[in-house]
Image 1 (tube, rainbow, N blue to C red):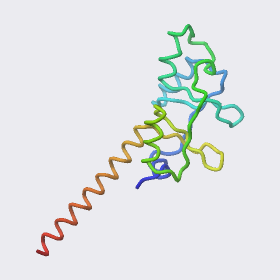
Image 2 (cartoon, rainbow, N blue to C red; image 1 turned 135 degrees about the vertical axis):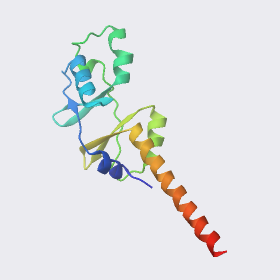
Image 3 (cartoon, rainbow, N blue to C red; image 1 turned 180 degrees about the horizontal axis):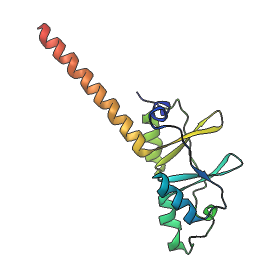
Length: 146
């Protein structure tokens, strides 16, 4: 079974973050440039929130916030985390239960990456494909013996 560490090994551990004072528009520009769905909001190397496409859609312009509004006014403050040792199954359960799409990865209290629901689904599908191929090989090798 795959772990968060194996996901980060494949995708890398680049973390994009902004300060709480960063404007909504600057966050969106960064997310567009890097082709990511969220950024961590950090102050003094401490995560104080996360800003995602959903945050912009739900609490951005429609709630009277303009493009120069500081991200701290629209970010999600309750951030859930995972560790590198956690399994993809555990991550999927947490993401489904909390209705979230991004999880920062903490190792010894330090952010070492961020995984998305797409990363988790891809990893789980690869695990299933490996299992299926292994079972097919087992069946074929037993048929030859008969």
